[in-house]
Length: 317
Length: 287
Image (cartoon, rainbow over all chains, first blue to last red; front, side, top):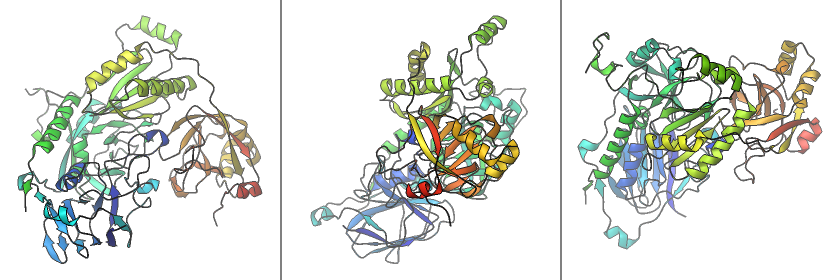
C-alpha cells in the first residue's frame, strides 16, 4: 500500500470526511471539516465525491512525501505552498510524482487548509465516517492527529489516466477571502426567551474578541457579558453553531467537535456557513453577531448550495 | 422599513430589522406537554413537560390566553422518569416515520434535538409532520428497562472525593458508599462524550455540586456524582464531577458488541467489589 508519508505533521493535521452522523445516541459528536466550503472545493478540484477523506491542516507546517503519481489540490487559508521547493498556488489541482515533496508554511491570516487527493485518502470508517475527533480518540488513522511517518494511503494513477487527467482551478473571484473580522448570522432559538430584549440588543450590538480557547470544539469569545434569567437548564442536545452563554456571560460558539449535550442556556445558533468562516479566525480576531430569521437562513443555505454547483472551474491543462 | 422609535445604530449591528424582532416567538405548542422550538437553520428541538392534570386545568381556567406553559416548568419539575420515557418513545416514532429527512437525533432528559436535511425538507414541513405525529401522542406505560449491574471499587484510594461528600453530608464514608449502591438508577441520557451515561437520581443526602474548577484529568472508569446525577467516566478526560470510586467495566468500546453495556431506559445498580476483584476484572489504578 502506497500513498503519502508524513515528514512533518505541522501544528494539527487531521483526516476529515464530511462528518460522522448517526451516532449521537452513543455520545459521538459529528466532527467533519471545520470549513466545509474549503473542504468541498478541495474535493471538487480533484473530481472527488464531496464526502471523500482529505487532510485538514490547522495553522500549517505539514510536510508530505509522495510515493505515487497522483493529483492533489489544496484550498483554504493562504499558507505558502511548495512542491519540491517551488511555489505552487492553492485552489487548483496539480499532478504530483512519486518522490515529490509537498510543504506547507504557516498562514498569517486564516487558520485551516484542506489537502485532497484524486480518489480520496483510503482511511477506515468507524461509525460510518473517517472524521478524526481527537477528544474522542476516534477516526483518522489511529484516532488522533497525524504524526511523523504516518502513511496516508491513496490511489495511484495509471499511465493511461495520467494522459487524460484534467486539472482545474477555481475562478479567482470565487476564492473566499480571510480577514480578522467576521459577522456571524444567528438564528434565535433554544432559550432565547430567557434573555431579555435589552440583553439581546446588547448581544447583537457588541463586538467580541476570540479568546485564548478556540479550537474545533468551540470558540470562546470575550466581550460584554450577557445575562440570562436562568443559571442552567436540564442538559439537552447541542447543534453545530449553538451559542452557549455560561454564568460568566461570555458566549461560546460550539463547532464540529462539540459535546453532544450540555446544560448552559443558549441564545440561538450561528448559520452553518458562518460557523465555517469562524473556524478560519483565531485569538484576538473580532466577532459580531447579526440576527437572521430561520427563513432567511434557509434561503441563504440554498443560494450557497446552488452557487457551489453553478460555479464553473477553469481547466488549467 | 425601519422601526422609528429605536435608537439609531450603525447599519451592520442593527438588531431590529423588519424581518427580525427580539421578542419574536420561536416556539410552537404541539400539545399540552410537547413544545417545539428552533435550534438552528436545520435543527428543531422538542421539549417535553410532565402533564399535571390538576395544575393544567386550573391554569387553563385562570388564563385562557396564556397558551404557552413556560419552559420554566421543565426546570421546576426537574428530572422525570415519565417524561424521559416519552422522550424515548418519541425517538422510536421519529426514526420510524421521518427516517428519510432526519440526519440524526439527540435525545436527552426531557428533549429531543432533531437535525434534518435541508435538501429533503424544510422547517415548515417538518413542523407540520411533527405536529401530526405527536399531537395525539399518549404516554404508553413503559416497559421496564434491563437491570445492569456495574461493579464498583469504592475506597479512599479510588474515590478521592468521598471524604468531602461525607463531611458535607455529615455521614461516614461507609454510609456515603452504602447510599450510592443502595439505589437503583435510570439511564436518562447518553452524551457529552462517547459512552457517558447520565444516571439518576442519587440520594439527596449525597448530592454534591460540581467542582468549582474542573480537574484536568479524571481517570477512566471514575464513578462520580454531580448534583443528583451519577456517571462512570468512559475514558480519561477533564471533568468536574466528584469521584467516589472506580468501575472496571468498559463503558464504551467501539470494537465490542454491544458498544456500551447500558442503553437509555435501562436500570443500573452499582455493586461494591474489593480491590482484588477490581484488578482481576481488568481495572487499573493510577500510580
